[in-house]
Image (cartoon, one colour):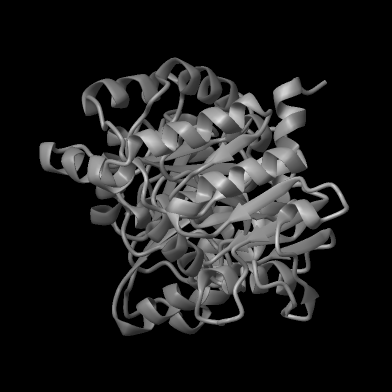
Length: 443
């Protein structure tokens, strides 16, 4: 059974009816873009544009006020200047709207704290929840709802993103398309006056479409609430965070951006680690993790084996494993039994398993097959450094075939391949297939 709060927040992600207050006829205005995205995204619920002029917008009857709508409204997206928002919130209260997604900016992020507090207090007094203000909207794959002013072409998938930055969130939507990352949801929280990361996690951890959650956080207002939520979430799915405002100047920038207090980065780091949260240093690192975790099976244990064709990159990978707490399988007798039939005498069956520079694609196939079959090996890191003797024309097919085998066999496999132009082209091609392939062992 889900909590009452979780049942309630379902209306934000799975609304039956949505109103756009500030729907515009000009295709360059946000009120038009959001309405267009809702209609073009396949949303099956009712959509009510609201504009004081009435008439029609995008072939839909347009209401002069939300109070003219006869049917119930679950979510109202408010896209009007800040000075008019409180009046719109009052109308929504009379209409008994459940959720307000306030796109409008011009509140605590510029020092207009009192007006922001007045809006949120009134909404809460009338049983309405507020997402925002100062947000780009919400996308929910469950409802095929794209109520954002980002790209209209969002690919459904397994990654949920919660972001405090609207501009970064919009850019992330575009980046997910390039990286072939599908989204189960992306939510902008902006100034976080009411609905925050903890509330959203309550829904996302129980969403069967969500396999990993990525959060971009500038500041935390209710620390204990967030700690409880992430502890609960990480017991079910991976949670990753990008936390900005680390430096003194960054903290000042965060305050002026979303009105947030960044707080002590050292404390945040320690607490998130205790809660089992992965922390990414950059968006690129976060997306690499998301893509891998969204598509790879979970390991059945901690034993990892490195298979390489070069000692140097094997040593680098060993260092990276130690740095990030990856446990390397250390049973020399078993490793020798498994890999000696396919390893030259001048190679090594220790971990890393060194197939040597004379290894071909068939040697990799054989070694990876043996590692997949052995139940004592729970995950595999395969390294390839370009050599003159390797049959390079088979590199892509070797990676793709083994990627499929390991996913079907329920064992994680990651490749790091390094070399010249042909290898770089191979990496670009393979990344489009969702194969876990990278150009550096530290990626």
